[in-house]
Image 1: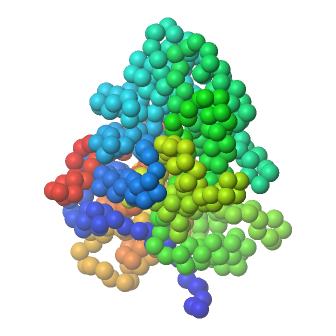
Image 2 (image 1 turned 135 degrees about the vertical axis):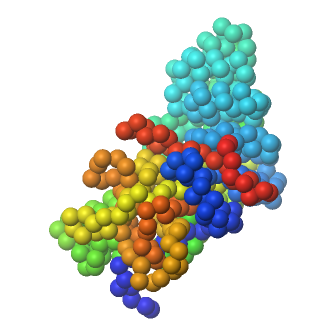
Image 3 (image 1 turned 45 degrees about the vertical axis):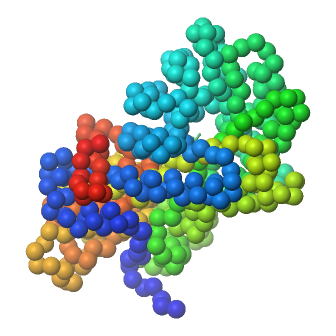
Length: 472
Ligand SMILES: *Cc1c(COP(=O)(O)O)cnc(C)c1O
């Protein structure tokens, strides 16, 4: 096996065809940046539809009644919500404006779901006025919704959020939802007493990316469905939330090498691969490293539709049947709420190079006209190699090959766009463009801020038929 002695550890991203097409016309991209300012986010609806179709095919294969609700919080652009509806799927909304925009865009209430973590009276009123299904998390919410529905003399469909499932005898912690026993009591009260809430189904959304935990949560939810059924209460749907893994990277080996080399770097057994040897969350004590980096698992073999299929084909030990069988035996409709995974390949962020300099340690710093909040998630770093669009006429001269760090516009020492050192095959020039692929899911929008009064990035859409880039 080849020893990696190089400084740079590549992490090659998977690139959709529309992205390849877009960056080929770099003069056009440059023109758009000059007009709209840097950075810009460019989206494309094709991958979104492809991703929806992938999930649909799995459900069809196992003859499961289903509806896919796009979790809007992963990306702010309304176009994806509208497209989800056009594709006969739905939208999961988590705030007043997310819901209001969808309603104003003509998305019908049957295609909408309200799961907001905080639901005030104004939001409940909007849901009740439009008969949008509300996912209830606690008793206070339930009482508020009852009150609003009574006041308006309207009925409203509800689902009950579950949490605190048990996996191998250990409770899976969650701040969300009712325990199975609590939920049983709550649903009994809702269905037996006079009120305007219509019980439709159960809901959960688990943190993390465990297939096993999701299978177990379905199994235990089914237990509750049966318990309710024994009291003549019908559960129509079970919503298993989002959190479907995606695969950002093309090479497993690179991903493994990255982890090995990061730990070596932390132990100073090699040159740093991150800025000032940032550990990305790995802990170093007395010459030993502990734990794993606090990063999204960017490489995954079982992802998206395969991830869903793995959940559905998991075997229930309790019922001695595969999960999909348990679902079909009870004629349940399965809802899923993917956010990130529907955004896979659906957007890129493009920024302009503003300066090159050396920091006090002699590291090459490449200043971009953008800030860290415009490419940020809860992951300690976004571990995909960006692409450099060079406008240097002299072509690809190897002598221009260099390594450095991308820094942004906030006046902070730690304002790095990427913590990882990046290799450029040509020395970046002022006005060159840096393209960050696959940023539509959370990266571009979730944490973007207007600190320093910087304007938010402009959101544009790529039209595959005409190859045009337009406003939303
Ligand atoms: C965030 C969230 C989702 C989407 O999660 P992804 O990891 O983006 O798929 C779905 N449902 C609920 C309730 C959420 O909070």
